[in-house]
Length: 114
Image (cartoon, rainbow, N blue to C red):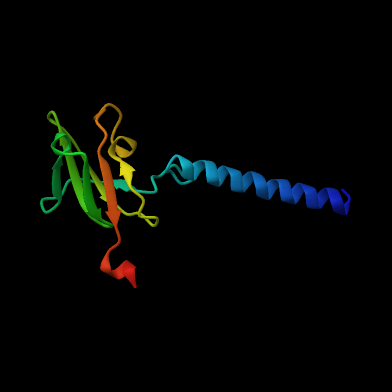
């Protein structure tokens, strides 16, 4: 391999990795398949409960655990987002949980503000 073709190979490899990461971030998942918005967890007694049909948006803090309920179904999510971008509940809910849009706004904690 000549020096020019090796450089071209390395550049194309770096481009491909960057493109894969960018594509991964556009659908709100890391390359390992986990959500950039947090993760499903077991429900806790002190966690917040939100009825999905009660509104169009909610505010949460990074680190909050929220149980979402709709028509006798529920799931619990721990919000941990480095970007603190809003997320539509349908993007993190189990398949078939809801077809209603509910925007979740994730705020920074006091510890993250410094």
